[in-house]
Image 1 (cartoon, one colour):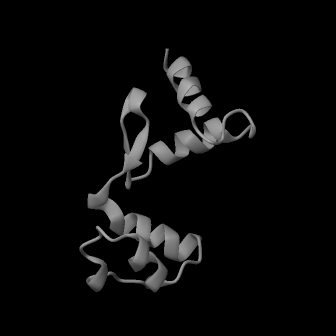
Image 2: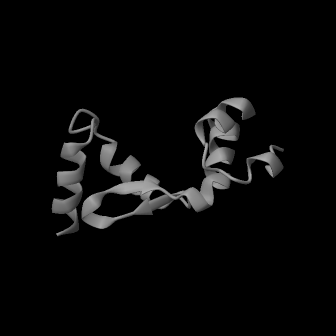
Length: 84
């Protein structure tokens, strides 16, 4: 049953069946602390864990702190964030 729901969500996404790794990426993303998995309704960002997302964007994606600050407007702890 989970595969059917997941297939439906992937079909609605911009990824669709174009990429063979979409199912793996979706499963990995659901397990991240800054993601809330809503079952049939998909996934959404968890604003209470933007510190984790900021770390990923900074360390793994190479974004600058100002870029992150400009996009994560609801991250209330950004002024005290440890970028090291």
